[in-house]
Length: 238
Image (tube, rainbow, N blue to C red):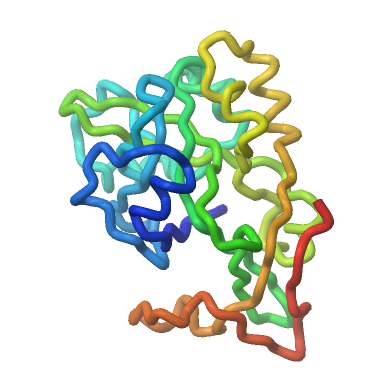
């Protein structure tokens, strides 16, 4: 499961690179580590508003839900969702069909278990630009959006640095954005896209092993730190 994301790119660079504007520009703050286990917000583009970057609570909730986010997450953790859940859970199925989202990130984290120790890798584009992962969203009674990333089976590159489970977020590249965000796209096409998402060139580097222990988020946290016991990371072949 993926409970942490990174969105560390400055607002002006994001708007320039993606040709999108923030709906609430004063609320966006670059964040090295977005912790989904707290009531965090993530930046998303919705099918209803494809020209703006909005904010959503991380962790999908039903549209008619009226209680606290934390209460729902204790009952049903929705920080990540897979295709099986989206096709079989009744209140999630309409979101997959009508409310898909592009979630804005600059990276995500992979975890390698080696000889009783968990090592963390930071996965990003080689140029450190923002990119999109696929998700779904709902709008609550109070107008707020809630959203969850969608995961799929990890590809060979990610699996070499991530063995605590077999999942990874789906990456939505420019080549499939229109398909992902269109109401005309069939459910079978969306399912195939989740099962076989694009494989852009990625970079994975190990980072400091105190990732989970140090409560201070310092600017060098995402810089490579190499350990003899694990692979040094590198670039995917895609």
